[in-house]
Length: 461
Image 1: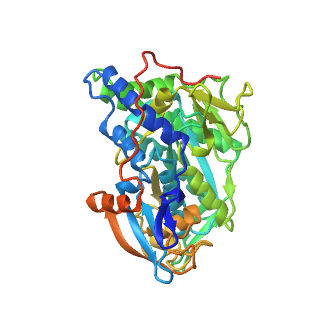
Image 2 (image 1 turned 60 degrees about the vertical axis):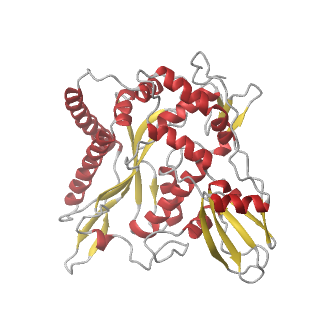
Image 3 (image 1 turned 60 degrees about the horizontal axis):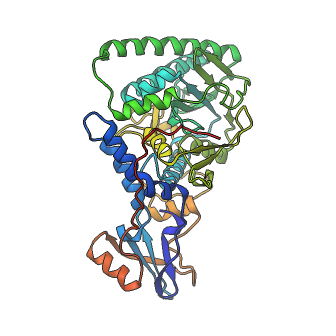
């Protein structure tokens, strides 16, 4: 739930004006044109898969009181507040993905990752491989498994050379489907302890540091990873054959990979230590977080679980195009890219993860069924600087406080505690309350645009 989703005033309901975001305006105005063109371009006439359309529909309903809300009241002064429901989508809504990002990072730092130095290993893949992984999340899991098995084997060999018997390794991996230019780019960010876990003579499990990888180690590892992935992809392509035609989403994902920016348009590569490149594959392992830097570890977890697009980076120009600012200038000095609205939505559609595709994966000692997991993860009473609730899941009020620094259960007027009076889904009761308070009881009606005749360029000056 977003900060603008709260409605409050002394002793009554009054809606604060919600922030009008560029993304919401573009989706509400141009979604009918996007879906109509998708249906006209698909062979079967259905357009995108249902999960893609559902993602856009849920986003348009996010944060609107007419779709349901929570009613809370202060027991001291009678102040009341309405808090709208959120859409809880995974790949489109910046608000909900921010909350999911923060929740994931808080869970990992407070409940999963023990005190140890962590190195970020980033594996990037050739364009053709990205398309296959975007279409087949089972194959994506196998590729991530190959990547981590090679790194784990290297860590165990290094530990044995330093006299550590029976070493164990682990990783938390974030699967990202997007690049910095809003292009389809499936790659993996793995947080791996810069050492191993071993059982001491007294039966306790201890973390033991090992020397970091050298540039030659990274190059050898990348060569092994690339060969193993190539062999697996060859077997997969032999199983698939080329008889089954791709659907509309698959065709647009292929275009999103093929029409990616040329090498001249990419940001200048940073060739630093512990980096290697080979035939479209790249492996980076330079970023290290110290054992006592838990805040830095949480920021790194947030980076791995972040959203593909942020509201703060979007704007509209005088021609109605969507302008996205870049974190780093391109090779030609450009600091922003401009998309036609429908083309911008097409890009977003290719980035939406399919249902049941895990974006955060646990391996080694951090896997749920590993026999050392209970001895490795933090004890129930330890945690980061923020005090976490004892329950298994974070409650919604705690999440809003941690994500947006808003305590919805503390009264703005007197500072007293607010209690939940009712949780009202969309229906007659919700409509009656909103009409009584003079608040919008119906969602805003989008302004429909006719579908364009031609496919607009991906981005321009």
